[in-house]
Image: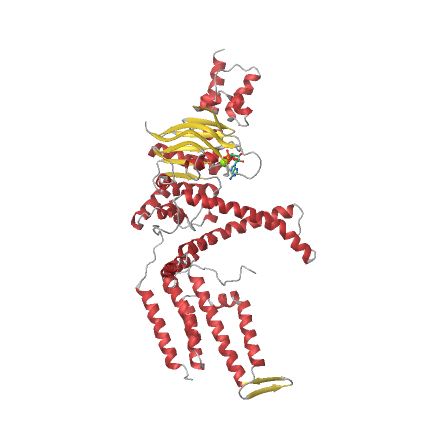
Length: 267
Length: 281
Ligand SMILES: Nc1ncnc2c1ncn2[C@@H]1O[C@H](COP(=O)(O)OP(=O)(O)OP(=O)(O)O)[C@@H](O)[C@H]1O
Ligand SMILES: [Mg+2]
């Protein structure tokens, strides 16, 4: 089941979106999330949705793949939609059946909120699908650099993130190994009462934690002997290159905002 | 000959809360010359890793002095000295810092502030030296143990060190991985005159060394050429070390009354001795 979940996963590719600098992508998605709240009528919401679909097309992500991977989240979207249909009681009454009354405003609100939610999820998924975790980390680090002045440990956070990402597969393998070792010793994780199952997890977690601490200690030593002493005076092997297409993306965003302002209903 | 490293009556005790602390390193002195290959052997807990950590300045001796590149190791010199030494540890997974092979090799370069233009050729060059240049973008979990250790060596080589320390770098590898790593180090030592200090349990590896230091309970028990060391087979066995296979076999043969002379460390030597000794009769 986890295999199918694509939220937060990276799929290498060669599209325009894949080739963008992580900084422009991150900046774009971050600003887009804010811009979504500018929409307040049918045409602006339609515009957001159309724009998102366009981005997905340009990134050459198959809709079926997205739909499959985001099923649990889509379920949530449909759920919000229904909640609004049923519980918002404003505007003209459109439909009545026994105790269910659906109002015009309910339908509108429901659709708007769902689009907002959907567009946010889709945009962030496109970001993670088209950008490798290392690039995201690099991009974040450079973008957050100005905040160093405010004593935000930007370099340390980025390093922490990249090391965690690097160790996920290692720890997964380890969990698997320990699991098999415990199964071979007769531990049973799949049957029994909840309490018994929780008890069975303990012998899995303890060795995992012990080894994780050992790894952390070894890694710290390995980093120190290789000259690591914080971000000060460090150079970077991974260079980010801001290209024309990245500037274009920023202009595209400005254009989108302008159109949103122009089309949104005054109130 | 130029001195690279010297230990002068070094002792070290770990700070622990419990009972009477014992000296992990007890009055150790030796000198390593430029271009030498030194092997350090000893049973588990004899203080080999502690010695390596002391040499890298991860902690300082309680007594005695350590001199590296003719400079005394202390807080002021430690970073400069580290940048001229490389060390590879036992566990291949726990020393892989970067997310890909090239990131990992570049790690020490980044730390030492090497500019980007110089980093790229150095990374490629170091990887070529360990025959891993095709794996630039590979992630660590897609590499074998031996490959990871070779990347670790490349990472150590990137700063163009004068001395390479291997702390049981081959002990977690399968025989094939071990051979790969040993071959790479051997080539490097020949090609670049690198000084190698290898801490090892593997007595076949010891045979490659110019000089062997035997550690026992924190003390230096013996030093000498491999053949001199293996001449004291009984002593080595008494402190829990294995002898190379050929050496063991020749001892057993002698015990059973086969008339052979001298020490035989490799199978080839033993075979030669066996067939020539029969000729003479
Ligand atoms: N972090 C530590 N804290 C306390 N004591 C330690 C620590 N590390 C090692 N020791 C002790 O110091 C002694 C020497 O340990 P060291 O790790 O140097 O041995 P070693 O020769 O490398 O052994 P091995 O062959 O198992 O790697 C041992 O008695 C060990 O228990
Ligand atoms: Mg050790």
